[in-house]
Length: 174
Image (cartoon, rainbow, N blue to C red):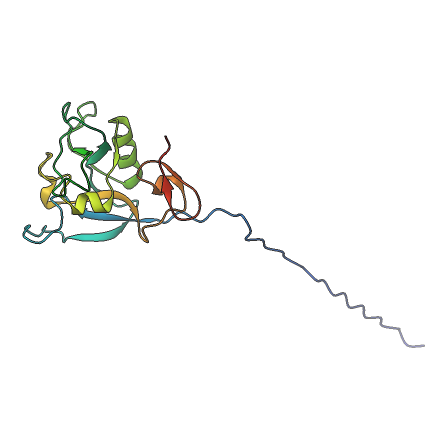
């Protein structure tokens, strides 16, 4: 008598379900850096260029802005368009750190400005020369702005001040 051979086949099915409803947008790894003196007609061009998008881990110079009235305590009003930016103050030197002038990654720059009582400037504020002449010779350097690559927010850290509401727009936290 000959041996009997039995073959069994098993089929496995895997189902993966993905939901995109109400998932937070992924935060961009790119932010705008802008010439510290601003970029406008009649202004000398920075050696590094006028502006560019850079990865958040890159090192760039730091200048801070804040909204408010009355310069002093290291804060000054430098904006060329005084009507549009009437309450924007800027500074560069932050004296409680080991060094007054800073070249940092984006997230360290955010922290420095927050601890200085301000925030990173918007791309538009720096383009408008709000940070020009505030110190450390950064007028010829590309400095961090809080503006993400597409100009819209997906996370609150992509807002210069305020809270991102997930619709791409920032609203003040106050």
